Image (cartoon, rainbow, N blue to C red):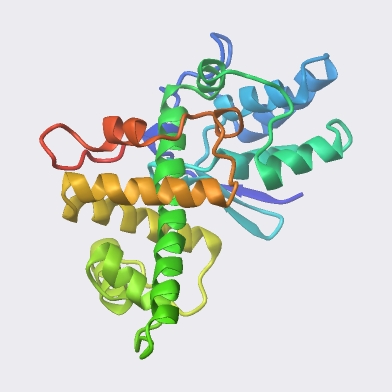
Length: 270
């Protein structure tokens, strides 16, 4: 097994992030894996032990067995299921394969934990970053797909069709600029060039950047409208909207409380 762990550690995964208990400490990745195995062997349910291990984890990303793992997007959005996949690879014989598959591919939890316990096991900083990932990546992708479907329906109903491809039209409609302009602005602001073939991690990082751009340019009413659209699309796709599957109540009110201050200007994602 070969693994290269990133040295730079953003605050969200620093030792200041309190995990599931007073004895967690600031463990190295190998120590977290060892503790994870020990907890399961000692009788802890594998899912509870997994969440505790995620709470102890400190690396935002790593290269392991020829694969790149980026758990933290843009230093703000935490994909805990990707880290769960990596950790569960360490105990293939100790967790029921059907339960693992249900978690990783369908977001179904094997235990009925409430939101507070889920948040406590991850720790405050990771849970906050998890919310950023849910709204800034998952809901944003659902919004994009929903708008594309709207455009497809409009083109189908029009006798003249539409010269723009649905995805290009979607960028213009949601973000107020075409795809090439947005990519150029992304490079200007981040120094990252997006090629024709990009990885899932690169795409999700771009989507999260688009999410923050949208919050900056849209007024409060438009943010609310697009949020409803994204949440509705996510629901139709059955991508684990239930709080029992995502560990967060996905709603327009929750979104507004987190990202849209009363002044109408968008709150910075944290």
